[in-house]
Image 1 (cartoon, rainbow, N blue to C red):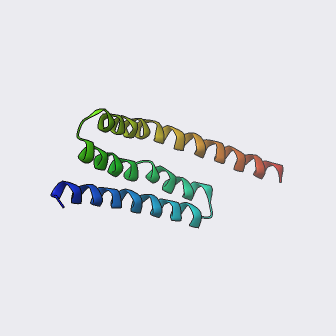
Image 2 (image 1 turned 90 degrees about the vertical axis):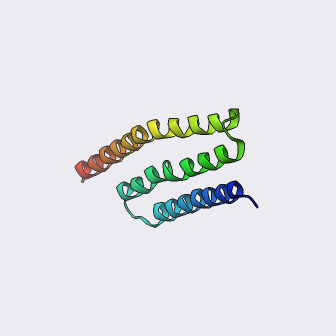
Image 3 (image 1 turned 135 degrees about the vertical axis):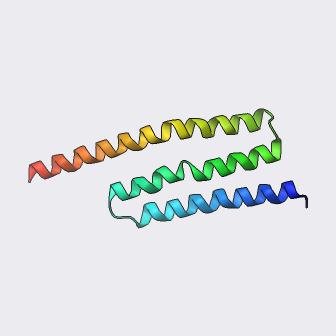
Length: 100
């Protein structure tokens, strides 16, 4: 087993562990706004570690470059999506309060 293979396995373990922790956090939280914190973390740490593992395995071939581009797309669109979900949740909460 080479050092590169060990590094791939470590980054894959980090990716899976981060995603599992985020999923547990999303399920455990009661409020939608608390869940958003775990949702945004799920789109940053895990995919980045997975992309590093792919680049270590395939080098900078088309597969490695695509993995990095997917992570870059997720990092740029993730905060926008999180903000949009939070805005909709806030608006729905305020509408429900006004109806009472």
